[in-house]
Length: 412
Image 1 (cartoon, rainbow, N blue to C red):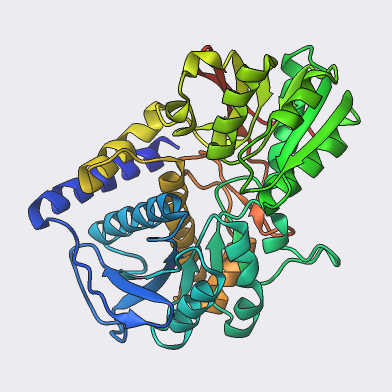
Image 2: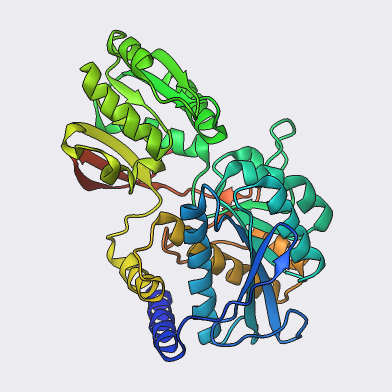
């Protein structure tokens, strides 16, 4: 592991030097089906038809309502491409990244992926963290047969829920899926607190929160008691009715894997309602959630999970390189995009080719023991097309103060 870490530091340092010499990598925009196109090849810009490049696609939200996440993913991918090219490329060839803006729209995503397959001749595509986007790409991926890597939390984006068979060209990378996240949180609460009476409050219009919450409810029934379940919709602004019911239910904590804006409203309205019990959240309780609260100290106690701790020493070379290139701090989604490109690099090396089918086979069968930002022993499960035995960093917010409670992976 030490050797691999040193290589990563060298690549990061090399990328910083080359960036300072050449400025921002060139972007070439063109109108296309469903989005704008940009190209990144480190310090080299080459055409899609040139034999000396391997074309990789990125279909992410660069201008829609999930553009914070989409740009973070895409920027992480671009930084990894720059590093890889500076270190000699893959199989002795440079990578050319072709990016399309899906505007967080399913049809735009299909259009971008189709163009990458048909015109750009991409070998693989890295896409969104939005489950709805990834679900919309399942059918077209079976037709075009170009492997797609994303971060959807809904396992239905990579596996048929009726047959339990994986979709051959869809891969979830770099984070546990929603049921796995729910299991990690449930087992952490069981092992580290005396809380046993749960209230569950989730957005019934969001595929991720539904899948996560339903999994948690089933798991928690084996551990303690689910005393009340309340729901909301994405456009709701008033939660006082649900929160008062929870207040009078005897619940000892609220499980709420909702979006940041919803969590902010929930906490602020709970304070107004006199409800003061711990919150158990998911990844969206990370930044910028705390900074959006009117009074962060009003949040007495909350626990949530992340795929990595951004202050970790291992993350700092990436953090500094990302900030130097983009002028802003990376977020967890930046890490996901960066790691996804290194997973893809490993698959291309294992395949020994830029052939999409060979890369697909390698992604399914040959990804194990990788040293990434989220894990120094990362593997993909061939049976689920998802990470294998990947735990999460557990975090605590107490009176507005954030702390790292350590890495947690439940025993089987």
